[in-house]
Amino acid sequence: MPAEHMNREQISNGGSKNGREDIVDRVMEQQPDDEILYDLAELFKVFGDSTRIKILYAMFDNELCVNDIARLLNLSQSSVSHQLRILKSSKLVKFRRDGKSIYYSLDDEHVRAIISMGMEHVEE
Amino acid sequence: MPAEHMNREQISNGGSKNGREDIVDRVMEQQPDDEILYDLAELFKVFGDSTRIKILYAMFDNELCVNDIARLLNLSQSSVSHQLRILKSSKLVKFRRDGKSIYYSLDDEHVRAIISMGMEHVEE
DNA sequence: TTAACACATGTTTATCTGTTCATATGTATA
DNA sequence: TATACATATGAACAGATAAACATGTGTTAA
Image (cartoon, rainbow over all chains, first blue to last red; front, top):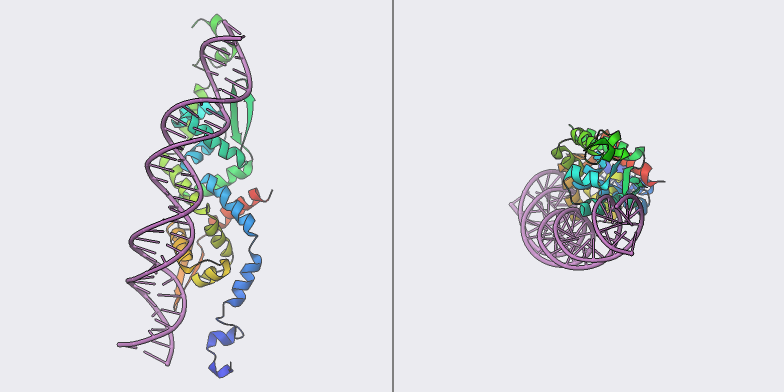
């Protein structure tokens, strides 16, 4: 393509198809593997349910057993247990048994940090 | 109930029903309004889809137009547009028009912070 | 070992959500 | 103004998912 037939954008980027190729290619290289981004989405999906968020927030600085959570949030025991199962498999909560009860708490500081970041965004 | 009929747990917590009442009451007071936690869940729900996460990550430090994103991630223009609509209404991205194209970018540092926190948790 | 309690799990159902396809809106250019 | 390009939007369908209900497992104490 002769230079006199190029528009300003094409000239400024060296004549690539539409002047965005370079940027698209660069972003493509920076992008993490799909698998990682899939896992990241799965993580946020767990936070993305109001029942689970309520449970997580209740445990923000308290260890709670299943029955505590059910009474506190007015949920069925079954529902709480199902949600805790999801939180466990995502490594967001840990637990310990004490007699007949099982006490749950947040697994690490990341969980608190993620919730706090979200709260900041919401409270605007 | 006479003290000699109480178990150790009941005595140590002053004789409340099952020794967890105090904690449950305290947590209940600390818990934010349902509406706030609902909004928080809604926010994370937006991050909880692999297509949207890919789009957000691609914009981590690049402004991109709809067509860029579609080519980059091998998605249909319609799909990208639908997802950007959701990201816009959640205030996660901002945009500007330049001629026929519309350039999208992350709305603020919170968005980057939330993604980074999530990444740290996933990369373990 | 039986009963009572605390929790987990399987299944079903109603609802929600992402994609696709078709079409509409908005912008630049000949 | 006609055409092409870039993006947005509406509708419909398929897959995902949370809640409810019933039942199973594990623990304690009589």
